[in-house]
Amino acid sequence: MALKMSGWVAFLCAVGLSFPAGAGREQVELPEFAAKHLKATMRDHLEALERVTRLLAEGSYDKAADIAEERLGMSSVEIHYERHVGKYMPTEMRLLGTRMHEAATSFAASARRAEGTGAADERLLAALANVMEGCTACHKHYRTQ
Image 1 (cartoon, rainbow, N blue to C red):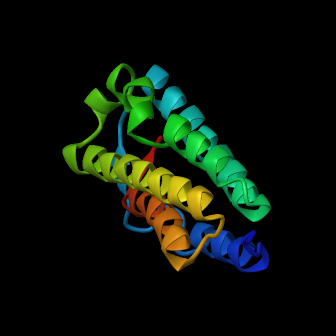
Image 2 (cartoon, one colour):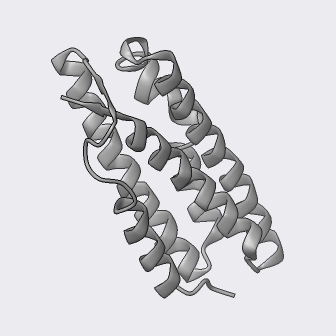
Image 3 (cartoon, rainbow, N blue to C red):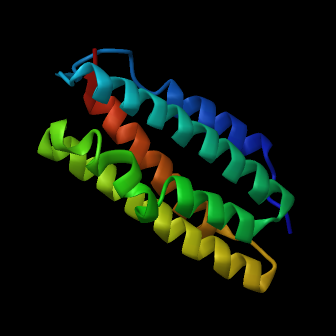
């Protein structure tokens, strides 16, 4: 059974509007190359979340799992952070990122289980919400130049 999209579209919009820009967020100074890499990575994360959501709507749970793990999960950590950005982040920011990557890996496992049963349920949606919660928490607390 494919997931209904209307509620997800509203949820995704709400996530982006949940806090005013710059309000009380810690400014993180990064070298220019690291800031550019981080912003490109964040855009890629958004594109991956969009693709995952579309695949869930189509009932393509294994494909959603693949995208989530490859572009958001723990498999992507070295690519995204360790070589380029992670060493410049404050410890708490890095921990928030790690939790998001762990949540994405957990979501991928949930999506694979859904593929096996042919049906998604609230646990799958909760697992995806945990990924987005990780993104939101970091963006709520930190900003770059």
